[in-house]
Length: 136
Image 1 (spheres, rainbow, N blue to C red):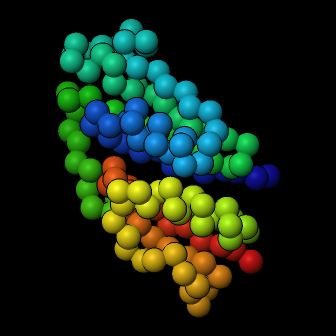
Image 2: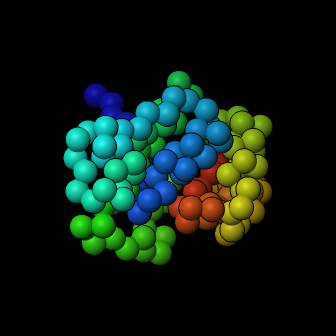
């Protein structure tokens, strides 16, 4: 039996631009359902926010996101979510890193590490921490 993991990110009003950005980095298909689309609007100012969204691609990327409505508590937290992107192709990982790094805060430069030919960590412009590394 095999399983897959999907990172689910919570935002307050930034889910759509975050998903669009991640699609621009990794490719794949973006799907998004707003609260209005789902006939689940609680606050008219949030009607166009994302109730369910994802980017999924044949290359293995799968990230989901939604906008937490104002009726629920929300605290983005500090380092509450890390997204790990692992692959065998250094050029591919480097290309993803370069695009993710636009507007990001680099925590650890993408470089050789004792456990990986390339490893890096950054916090993207939406405050999400990403770890990219090359495996075996």
